[in-house]
Length: 103
Image 1: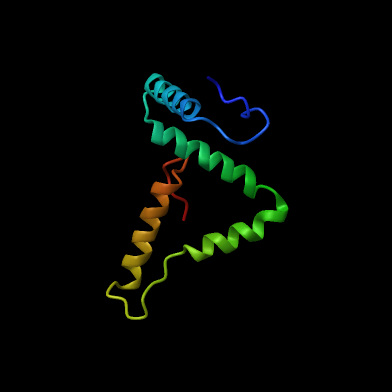
Image 2: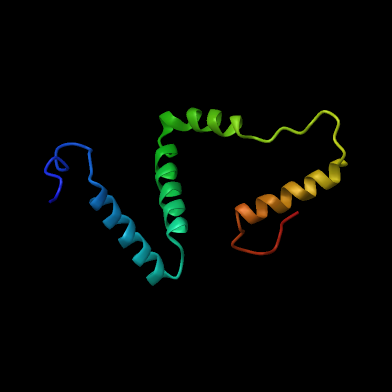
């Protein structure tokens, strides 16, 4: 029996949620990816839309800064190694359209 309150309240039945997850698995299979990748992509799209609003940019910066890695005061790496590591890390996160780097 379908949840008769689902149209007016945010309550959903287990069957409705299971059906959505089953459909998500089917879509992932058709797309040749995983349901986790689809969920990540959807979550990033939602966050991207949220932070595009001018009034929320400060919130984004504050939240991102709270997750920013902090180097220890005494670092066993030399500065060029840290810069190379961070550059490599960023290039994996933000792939460039053009593989050539500009200096």
